[in-house]
Length: 92
Ligand SMILES: [Zn+2]
Image 1 (cartoon, rainbow, N blue to C red):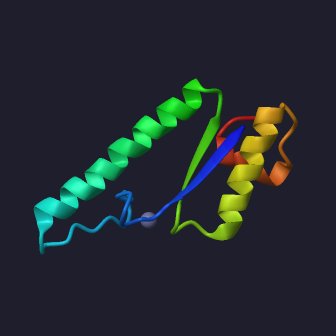
Image 2: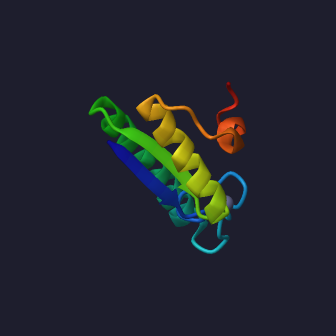
Image 3: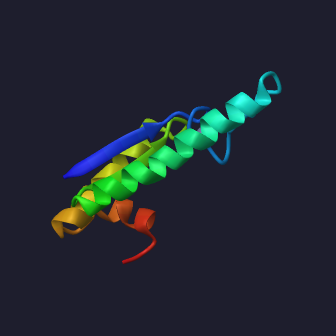
């Protein structure tokens, strides 16, 4: 079982693109940090239930997302990843 999330850079506090609005700053910081905490809880529950969780960022090129998902599916199936994707996992 595979759960794929594509996180919005603003709403999930992307480390590269997070912005912290000055207006109502406390509200937005609590909102975004709450979303990040929920993501962690969600991932933990899914993993404990046997799911493989993949989180991608909306800023990632679609080709990179597809390659990352393909690599993870191959890994989960125990099949060999295509050579072109081998560098994504940092192993092999
Ligand atoms: Zn981003």
